[in-house]
Length: 310
Image 1 (cartoon, helix red, strand yellow):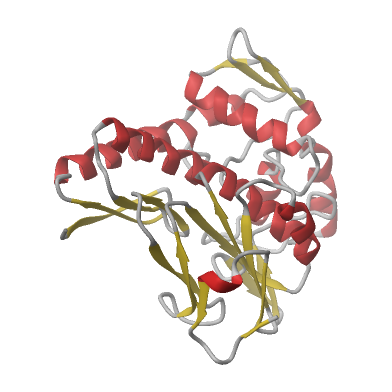
Image 2: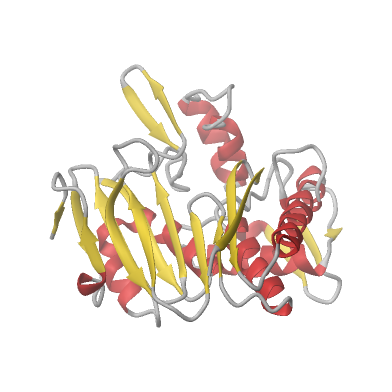
């Protein structure tokens, strides 16, 4: 079957959608329209969205949102309260550094200290009956950047299933979701190489394959490289030896959440991931070492001899 592929720019990245016959271009366009709708509702990079309405009224009153937004915020808050490294209230810190944007800068220690009390997920009030969200302190901001792509990818898969798309690839810029009962081969990006250069190839059944790395968005100042994944305790980018983490999971939302948790906790997270059903991880360190969770060794092929699998 010949693939039908289209590329779009949305969610701040290049998106590639692929389907196989008998699916048609209409299935690709339907997915793109869904992406546009979800971005309109969930983005924090525009003045107006449902999430921005919540942020704008922080400390003032609750905001009633759609079921779509409430479900995602509720999931993000519940994960944040587990204090494993994922924090949906990280918005003030993200905006302060603004890494990945033209005005990115390293804030002062004092500026960071003023934001730390505002990134407390326990200060988020949810009302299940009304589908409302209230940020109790003025200055608080939700940021769904670490979870929204996964949520959207899963929604596209559901849409395609409803449209009887049997086989396809959803690529939301680092978030890969494979649709179709077959064996797939997915390349894992080399963190220290140009985009498209792979260190290994993973063979997997239909799954989500999501990668987060320090190479995606970063800021170089005074010889120091600051990436975009923050430690809620310090207000600075997470400091460990990891260059990237790839999570393989049944759905993209789960994979998205666990890339953040795994990156925050470093190699110590392998034990935690081993306790989760149908979850696997590939860790790549800044010293070109690769660590795999159980069951992956026979599913990967090393493509770059500079790296070593431990």
